[in-house]
Image (cartoon, rainbow, N blue to C red; front, side, top):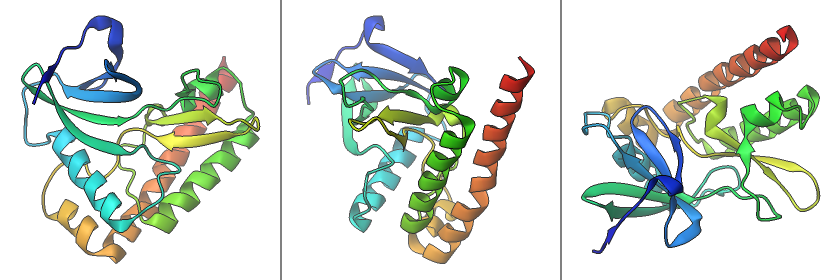
Length: 197
C-alpha cells in the first residue's frame, strides 16, 4: 500500500484525538488521522467497525457520511469518508455555524433536527458525541438544507456496550432515543447564547 503525504494546506480541523484533512487525491473525500498516541479508545477503529456494521445493515446514508476504509498516512492509519459539499460545489458549514450566522431561523433548524432524529430512530443509528459541530448543513439544489453527521457515531470506547449496540437492536434503540435530548440541550444552549449577544 502506498503512503499518502498530507500537509497543512489540506487540514480542515482538529478534534480531541484526530486531525481531519482533505484527501490529496480526491477532494470529495476527507481523511481522519490520529495525532495522539493510540489509546484504548482508538476512534478510527471504532468508527470503521460501526461503519461496516451500518453497511451490512444496508442503511441509507442520507444523513451520515459513508466510510471508504483505511489508508496509510505516513505510517498512521487514516480513515476515509465522504466530504460534505453543497450542491453548488462549495464546502458545507457546520450546523452550529449556520445557526450562529443566522442563515436559517431557529424554527427552520428545529425542522431539520426533527428530520435528523426521525432518520436516526428509523435506522437505529447511534449518535454518541452530540456536538453540533459534528453535524454539517448541506445546501441542496432546491434551496433547502439537509443535516449530515460527520463524526461521533457508534461508541466512545470499545467494550461490551459497543458489542450490544451492534448485536441487540432493542438496546441500541433505547440508547438512540436517550441520546437525542442531549442534542436538543446543545441546540437550546446555542440559541440562548445567541439571544444574549
